Length: 122
Image (cartoon, rainbow, N blue to C red; front, top):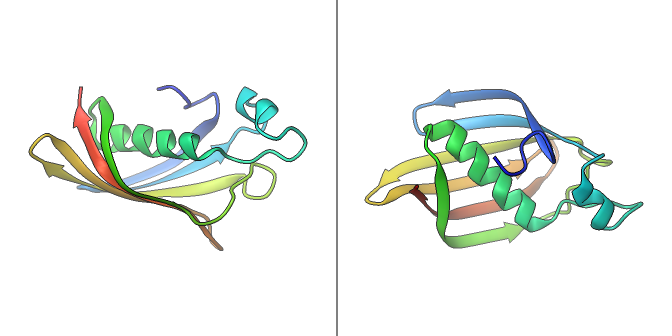
């Protein structure tokens, strides 16, 4: 895992077949935030995508890489100071070469990212 326990940590996870919900806590002392708008840190989109990939790997029990992104919409700005805990909801359907993944990053009030893509097993 590239970002787990450095940028975020999983505090809870529930899985049911191809579906998973992972509660994550953003780690405000991460080096990422020191370089990404110090004093007003925001979550870079690429880090949101990596969190989705890492949680999908946790859900499927497979080491994965992103082979294609069909949709990636940043719908709000996430920040460890504004929304320190987020939910990552994932649906990972088996496909010919891995998994078709749909995911959302949200909290009780907002959706921060919507994602659809293909992930292959390494």
